[in-house]
Every structure is written in structure tokens, then in C-alpha cells.
Image 1 (cartoon, rainbow, N blue to C red):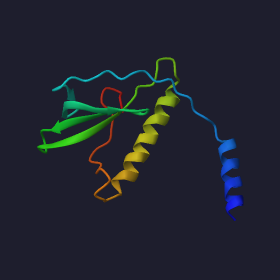
Image 2: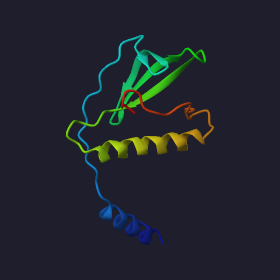
Image 3: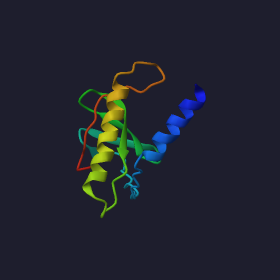
Amino acid sequence: MIESDVDTLADIAANRTAVTVERVEPQSLPRGAPLGRYLVLERLGMGGMGVVYAAYDPRLDRKVAIKLVRPVAEGDDNSTGELVRTRLLREAQAMAKLAHPNVVTVHDVGTVDDQV
């Protein structure tokens, strides 16, 4: 049974359409920079999808982490950017359903100045 599962996964992978997206480096946001209703405190890390910042939510008086997806490079079609937005929204919806001490809680998802 395991062999047939591996074959099935191989078939699925072979038939998938790969999406190649050229990414541009995100701008580093300085401490105190507004990001929607949040204020940037510091950059926590950067990876393949984008940048994570520590920020402050003055409305609810709490610290939060904000993940910004790398902007799609100019010249890429709009459907690529929409695909990235859709994936992030799905990720946020899935994470919002989880409650575990080792999983971050999702409080918000959206765009700021066309950046997800």
C-alpha cells in the first residue's frame, strides 16, 4: 500500500504546474514605522516568503508579530500576486483554527499599501 501511495504522490507532483515568482527584497522598516494600525518595534527574521516584525498594537495594548510577504517583482503578472495573497489567507485561516501553546495565534490578516 505504501508503494502505491508514493506512486500517487509522484504522479500528482509531476502533473502540478510550478509557479516561479521573482521576489524583490522587502524594505526594512525602522522602529516606530506605522504598519496599518501597528507600530514596528524590530525585525525578527527573514525567510523565503518574507519578513517577520515585532510590532505593537496600541488599540489592544499588546505586542504582536507581523509577517509581510515579499512583494512580487515588477513585470510579474497580477495573477502571481493574487496567488501569493490567496496562499497567505489560506495559511492564516488554517492557523486561526489551531489552539496550542507551540502555535502562534492569528489575530488579523490583510494588506497594507498593496503588501500582504
